[in-house]
Amino acid sequence: MKVKNIILIGFMGTGKTVVGRHLAALLKYNYLDTDDLIEKTEGLSVSNIFKQKSEGYFRNLESEVILTLVDYEKFIIATGGGIVLRRENVENLKKIGPLVLLSSRPEVIYERLKDDKSRPLLAGNNPLGKTKEILGQRTPIYESAADFEVDTSDISVDEAARQIIKTLGDK
Ligand code: S3P
Image 1 (tube, rainbow, N blue to C red):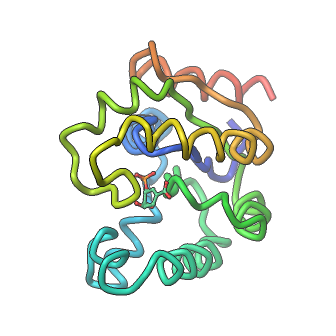
Image 2 (image 1 turned 60 degrees about the vertical axis):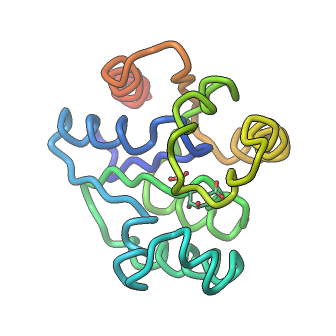
């Protein structure tokens, strides 16, 4: 495969972390997650950054972190679900590698995340409704940013990773 890096984009709970880690193992690439980088540099969890600072503060950190990745090679980079909301981020990410969109049906996302308290945007008493609402707003943005899409609703982590390798290999 000729790609320098692979960028995984998509909504929370679509498998960016698990598929990304598996993809990295299969390709012998490194794995990196923009949320992890932000948490390390800030010394705070993403939900605490949202609480103690603000969502806008977190979004600025996301834009800054992308700029530090331009010289990376052989990395699978999983990104936070909202990173594509700024067009400038999409443009900068495209300089690093192809953007692979992971998608899933809202009910599947809900099942995967229902016991997970680390997603501030889905906190509250109607997480499925929230998921549908945000997904509805973001789907066109995800789709226009992506080079191609893999729906992980009904396939295994291994199948998703191999589908990505096959599609990039054919390109
Ligand atoms: C967010 C997704 C999260 C994290 C933050 C905001 C979003 O990342 O960046 O909670 O706006 O969709 P994951 O997609 O890795 O859960």
